[in-house]
Image (cartoon, rainbow, N blue to C red; front, top):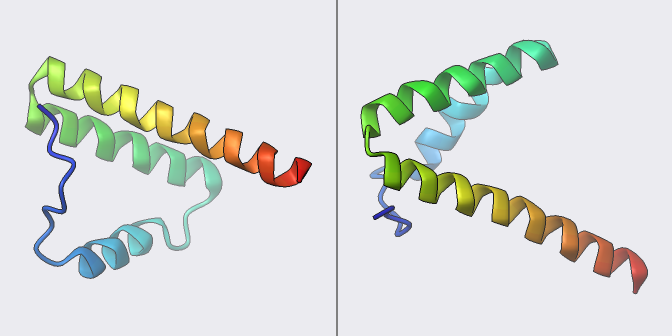
Length: 75
């Protein structure tokens, strides 16, 4: 099962490092860096069921944000 509880020892430091990873990259380079990071972490996790759950949750979150944005724009 995917652990969705807060699990980072230093979340602010991680977020800063993630932003720094993208600094001075062109958009296509930033997308490629994200893809490489995803593949590296997926390989580290290794469990297909956990990875599938994470993909479903990520997609669902993006679709939910789009629904909320449309509702806010219509209000």
